[in-house]
Image 1: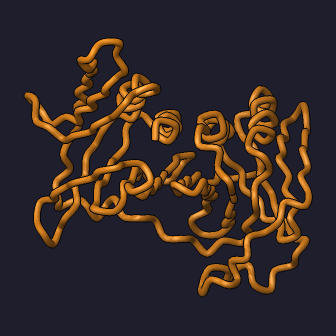
Image 2 (image 1 turned 30 degrees about the horizontal axis):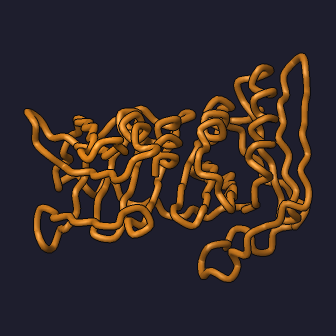
Image 3 (image 1 turned 45 degrees about the vertical axis):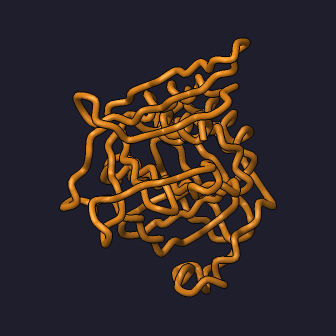
Length: 273
């Protein structure tokens, strides 16, 4: 879990932690406009905890929503690298806190326990609907991303040339990263990436159906936002894909799987010349 939290801390200064009986969610629900970003990270608690108990505000609303600074939680979990056990508990110490108790190995018979109290804000039930999972947009092209380390290296070089980057892709497994300014034009080409079989999922690829396989859909985005996402990766996803929607809401989505979690990250598109 430490790698997941570290990745999230690179993407946002504050986020919402939603706790349910079966899952944990880290949510950034900023408006995806003017270069903004939004995030939805979903984890099955059974993959991370040997014991898990929670009680929400009521039987019919058995959930808890907290606002926290992920960097604080990341720092606390760094001390758990060689821990015998880690316990995380919601407490009230002058203010609501997540208490992280780390039991460390000891040469003596007594245990060494390091405790971190992380301040959190309790989000009232009346605004819970503001933190629901975003719906999958009616995208134009969906494509698997290249190895993220390679993509990160390319983007880091390009960010010194421009504040914006154009990602374009088609349904033939081709993707280009482009920088175009008055002084320079640079393009990196990727081929044979493959396209996810969304056609098998009802209602997911209506705008892509009948689309020319060679036709490119493009997204002009803030290159620093993309570099921030790639630089913060600590989870080594087994799959990463990009969905581009050129029309109406104009969004780029990246979804990643590593078996234990799903991370959904949305970047708004900027007007391209």
